[in-house]
View 1 (cartoon, rainbow, N blue to C red):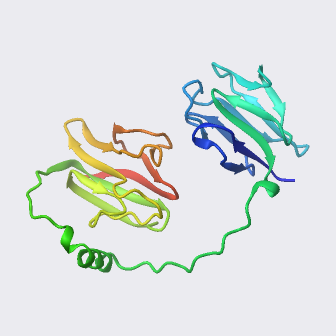
View 2 (view 1 turned 90 degrees about the vertical axis):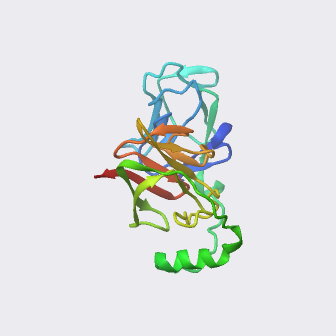
Length: 234
């Protein structure tokens, strides 16, 4: 039997997460719990030498709740329900919860970026408006390295802004399926390069929903399966 967690409420409702390796839960955990009552590192799940899985509270402020009571640790079994803040989890049999594997789509041909831009220009000529947009340089230039997803191993070096990045952005397109038209913006400011998004639940910064924040070296931006690492260069 393969165990999994199933979200019972909040952003994780009905999401099934198989347990294969030890994971942490919390606002900064491997499984992100956005509840205001969750600690940054709230609890952990890890396999034991006997082949069981153990839930351990990590001295969280509001506790890990099972059947209305705080627990320090408890062995997982199918049907167990626990809460971290208002985010509930149920332990389920992954083999019974997982749907049949989808039919794999044909592999996507990765076109050269020049051809992608050319195709986009031809398809969107009627949308172009001749207007001046004030821009400012990024100090230093922003580097976006694609670590995972359809654009893995791509690198963008951006010298000026503001810049829009998204599915409908011609010069900086995101190929991730179901990505928003504009995933996020990068805006020059006196404090540094500012990351802004209107889709914080879909476009996360360092695995957390953030509307606006100054970027630093090593920050990561995630859009579904696409993962981008931030760097800077002179």
